[in-house]
Length: 420
Image 1 (cartoon, rainbow, N blue to C red):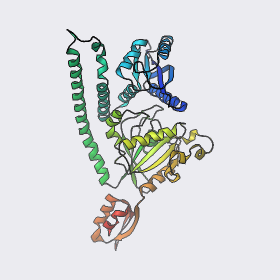
Image 2: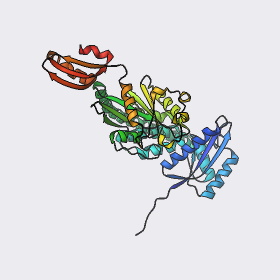
Image 3: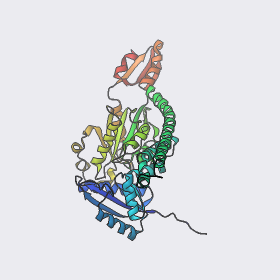
Image 4: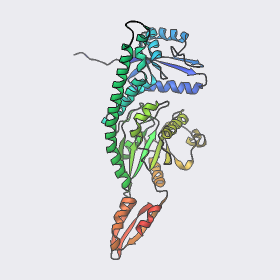
């Protein structure tokens, strides 16, 4: 018997930083690129960082660093170069030809991870749309060699005809995928509509990828969602029900995680997934309290929600992984610098369970803001209002007495008149 072992792809990470970027931002960006590469199953064997006023139009990095990169490829036996910025087709081809190995950029890497982790039909369709959009925007680079032939007999027409044909094929494929996605979204919309019509509140869990969202959902609901120390370990939204001791129920929806510089077309492709947050009664933002780049990560989350037009929904921020911190937690997490209020934040650890009960109470308290408590006896000729409270509010208890039905619960103050 022979034991076979899949060899990891050896990669070199390349970062061309602009002179306006800080050393910390540069380091955080290249570290995240390494995490993305690890998630894709690759092994980092080297890295090159260069600071320039602007990217080199031809080769992304300067000529000196390009020679250094070529030597590093030969010394490490690397299979692939991964650049931290989106490359033009000509830049990717230039680097590949100069080094003799495959060259991809950050966007292609993220697309590859999304394709790897998408499990539902909807997730796969969304990945397909993103891949087609990327291919369409980078199609012209495939024909640059043909264009170098210049004009004259034998060079007119075919190149342009071929590229237009491929563009038409890709656009048709995108249209077909969007049609399929729309059909899937009708089903999801109907599910959301039923939630809105019912009394069960919905909490959308959002946050930077690898912040611990899936771990939290698993602890709350035994959802069985894949939870790994990798970026984008889960892509497809998962909704599960949590029941408080008094019987009140809340739906928690885990959404895809965010990363810095997520391409716009990728945000658009995953709009239906991220729209779970738009239909939620509360947005729970989960942040990794142990990550030194927490501030920037929270900015990415809020900026992405802004891009989606998700505004005006109540928010609670949970600082996760406090078990990895030493000393005074509040000193390490200055709320003013993060633009947060103490009453809207909770410190917790989804892994150990510390602070989770506090989080649940904070969630319930926030969901019930604007609600009024109900404690009344309804005459039997108004028994239908019990069902109304069950559908529009929260029915805690009902007791049938000789004089009527004693009910307790809560309902939005704007709907209190319905029970009178």
